[in-house]
Amino acid sequence: MAKTTTLPTILTAAAVALCAHSATLAGGGVTLQPKAGDPLVGLSKQQTALFWAGRLAYATPFGPETGLGPVMNKSNCQSCHSNPVGGWGSIAVTRFGIDDKGEFLPLEELGGSLLQALSISVGCREEIPVEATVVATRMTNSSMAFGLIEAIPDAAIAANEDPLDADGDGISGRVHWVLPLEDSPTSPLRAGRFGWKAQVATVLSFSADATRNEMGITNSLIPTETAPNGDMALLAACDAVADPEDVPDAEGHAFIDRVTHFQRYLAQPPQTPRSGMTGEQVFNAIGCNACHVAQWTTANLPGLEDAIRGKTIRPYSDFLVHDMGLLADGVQEGDANEQEFRTPVLWNLRTRDPMLHDGSASGGTFEERVAIAIAKHGPFGEGAASAAAFAKLSATQRSQLFAFLGSLGRNEYDFDANQLVDTLDLQVMAQCRLANTVTADDACAIGDVNQDGLVDSVDMQGFLLAAERDGVDITGDCDKDGTPDFVAIFNGAPDVDLNGVPDNCAPACPADLSGDGAVNAGDLAIMLNAWGTAAADLDGNGSTGGADLAILLGAWGPC
Image 1: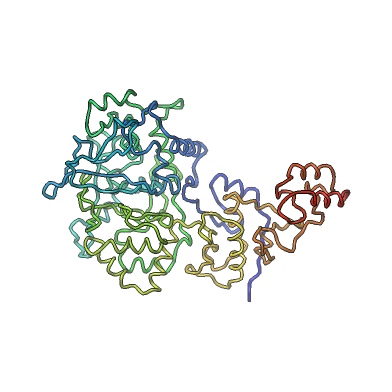
Image 2 (image 1 turned 135 degrees about the vertical axis):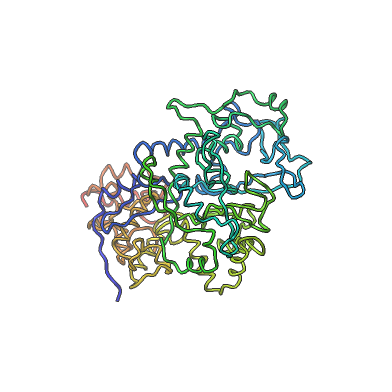
């Protein structure tokens, strides 16, 4: 028998909590996960302000007058980290160098190993030198939740390394130990965790490196300019802005500080449903979890922000570098050799197109991209056994695996996966309310946020907050009975036209456009202002015109 549910009145405090990104829902204690690109839950007012100021800096282009170039790849961070802002990108950069008897030489004297493909003028352009025998493509990595990743203790990352494959499982990942740019030469090395080769250990180092190498903006940590193909005379002719070009603003923050704040305070993307899908068991059974380690706990240190300290996160990476066989690109960075790549995080995977460091798994459906990416882990290298095991999965097991991987980055209540919780999703919620038992593998699990096996009134509270967060008006109550329209539809009221208003609900006085209980001059003014649009359409033809005016005048007076 179908269950019945009712919904308590939405508390103002819950809406306020949503705006503050605390996301705690009234009634039942369910929490709404932040969307990818949102700030961390639990930031202070000051930290939240730093996040949004950094978000603005991240998207603001530099120009030649503020130090851009003379050679660069883009003029702002958002151009590359775009899905969402701070996330994956479809922009590629090029690495080049020489393969000298199996050893990579970066051709630094000729501008290597990173090609800056753009310039502030044609005469300052950089090109791949004819001497280069290695040319590799790198896609934009994600910057999601960098503060949480930085806060994983070095010792925890090192505990997973097995450089000699002592356990014989074919996995020999190791830490790429690096010195952060902001540390002194005598400081201890840190476990690298950012970048395709784990060549960066801290968010500030990442910001400073990208600011100079991708945009040509010199800063306090890298104060020297990149010369086009190493030509210092050309640099002198092209670069007219004194170094360092990144200087503190009126509040004392340089650009690299601003974008560090943004990346540091980005929330971890959602995982919906949050745990327990059968596909994760398949993921583990074929050995993917040997490198894509699901869960970590950040350090519990007094100096860390409350929103970062002692948090459980699920990035699905071990942050080690591994021999990737045929996926290798022949480029060495620091102590990460030509064959090695860091295990990429999988959170927010469902939005990633293209996949893999070289973008070779692109286009098509999500499932097709994932299948290509996994297959390319073989037949050699540390991912070969998993690729072979994947090839032997049954169709059902593959579907389960794809469903689990598609949960990484999926927003709660977003049944149609369009990144928006709206009236289309409301219809599915209403159908899911009728289910007696909801498992994590069911489609309805996207709406069972507290994973209690039911899509009920508690889950509906979260739906309303999620819809409001996405800009949907949830306040409608067409018959003024105190039950919001969305709740009525969730409880079974028909909404065939999917407009979020029950079909059997019509205002007692349709011409009362102002809702004051009478048809009068105020309604006439509303209609005249809406003339030619659908805003005051009373006859249902999609436009406000003479016929609607006649209806309004015929209804003149009290309702």
